[in-house]
Picture 1: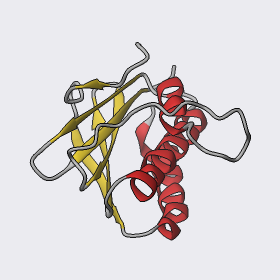
Picture 2: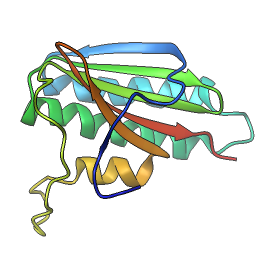
Picture 3: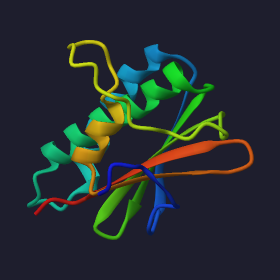
Length: 145
């Protein structure tokens, strides 16, 4: 993947599994718990390492939703979809005119700026698109195994 986030709809966004609307950052912890249960219970094939899928989903969802509260206009709408051989995590905000961009890492721990970098490393594919009133950042995760 290049150093820039590409503007495109996700390939095969799939069928909706679950949707969350987060009004404030305190809702990130319950989101992580829900994603762990879903990923561990019904997403990956039985012989796959669903723990890795769950960890990746939880981390990326938290990072992308956190970006909504730091850099965009809440609420954050988190959508999980099941596509052939993968899942797509889509996080929307209400600031469609501001394109997502990779932050320049400060080199200091705890200063943030690594959310999109982490998503790029953990996801199979990453991109974004805008509609008239929302911006969506999506990450696709292929099933392990």
